[in-house]
Image (cartoon, rainbow, N blue to C red; front, side, top):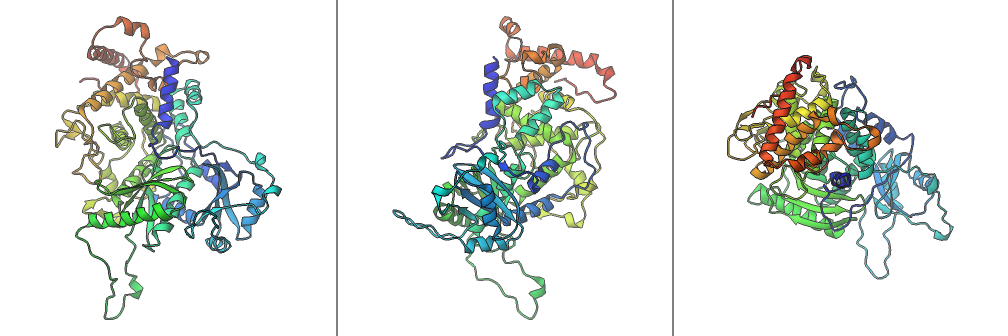
Length: 585
C-alpha cells in the first residue's frame, strides 16, 4: 500500500503539467551566493516554524509595486544559451565589458542557460550591438534582434570546464520518495503543511525567469504595438503557484494611444488612423492571430504555437522551450489580473493561508479531483476561493470579506473594469491582522468537516460577503465570481464530481480525527497526517476492518460522521472557546 501512496504522491507534483510537444525539462538553477536573488529568497521563505498566525510587522509591498519592480528587473535581464563547458569567471568577465552585472544564475533546460541581470538597460544595447546573426550552411536564419542570445567559444578546443565549482540547487519539487519521507518525519501536521509549502512554492529564480519570459514575448509583440505590455497573471504572481505550473500572460494594450496631458494644448485634437472592426472580440481575435503567427515564425524558443481564438477567452498557447514553461497569452484580461492581486493580498495577510491552500490543492490533485484537462472537475481557483471562504467563517475571522476590503479603499483604489466594480484597498498595511490563533492542523481538519457537511444543494459560496447565500441557479456547485458577480466560477463542475469531493472531504476529516490514536512511530515510516491524506481514497482505512465491512459506502461514511460528531461533543469543553464546526447534515 505504501508503494501505491508514493506513486500517488508523484502525481501531486508532476501531473499538473499539460501535455506539450516537448518534455518539460528539469530547471536546476546554479545560483550565486551573496546576490540579490539570495537576499530575496530569504525574504520570501514561508513562515515554517513561526508561531501560528504571527506575521512580519514590517511594511508589506503592494501588488502593483511588486509587479513594477519585477518588470523593471526583467527589462535589464538577458537569457543566454551557454556551452556545456564554460568558465563562470570568464563568462562574467566577458559580459562585464558591457556594464556592471547585478545578478545572475544558471539553469539547465535542453542545455545550459544563464539569466543575467545588468544594472542598467544600456548594457543590453551594448551587448546587442556586439552580437551578430549566425550564418547557416543548409538553412536560412531569420534575423531577429532580441535579448535571447547564443554564446559560442571562439576556440572550443581551448575551453576548459570550471562548472564543478558552481553550487547546484534543484529547482524541481522533491521526488515522491523524498516528499513522503519529509511528511512522515515531520514533527506535527502544522510542520507537514509548512514543509509542503516550502518544497512546492515558486523559487526566486523561477519567478525571475517567468517575468523574463513575459518580457521577451513583449519584445516580439512590440514590433506591432510599440507601447504594449505583456503581464503575467494567475499562479505565477498570486503567490499560490507551484513549481511546474503554467505561465499565464496577457497583452495589455491600454497604454497605447493615451493622451499626454502636457502635450494636449491648442485648438485641435490629433487621433491615430486605425482599422475598425465590428466588435471587441473580433479585434482581440485579429490581434492574437497576428501575435501567434509572429511567435510561430519569428519567436526564438517558441514552439508548438496554437491559436485558440474561438474560446470564450481567445488565447495563443505555446511552449517556451528555453525556460520550459507552457504559456497561455490573452489580451486585455484585466479582471484576471485584478483577481491575481486579490489572491496575492489574501496570501500575504496571514501565514496560514498559503500553507492551507497548497495542501488542499495537493490533496485534490492526489485524488484526481482536479486535472489539467478541461472538463467537469473542480479547478484550483475554485478550491482557493473555497479555502478563503472557509477562513472568513472562523471566529474570529482569519481573512476579511471583499466587501470589508472595499470599505477600506480610498479614491486611488477605485477600479471599474467593463462595468464591474473591482474596488478594494490595495495597501496591505491598512488591513488589521486577525486575532485568530488556530493551528493549521485544526484548520485543515475543520475545512474538511465544513465542506463535508456544506449544503451545496441550496447554498452558494460568496467571498464578497463572506457568508452562505441561496443558490441563484441549479448548478451542483455555485461559487460566485468575486468581481463578475453574475458568473459562477464552478459552473463546469458536475454532480458526480461534487459528490466525490464531499465523500473524500468526510473521509479526510475522519483520518485527521483518528491521527492521535493511530499515529505510528517515526521509525515505522508509515504515513500519517497529511501524508495519509495523499494516499488513495479508502486505502487509509484499516485494511482488515474494510474487508469485513460490507456495508454500502454511504453507510460507512455516515458511521464515520457519527464518530466525528461523538468525539467533537466529548472534546467541546476543552476547545478554549474555539468554534467547533457542526457535523449535522
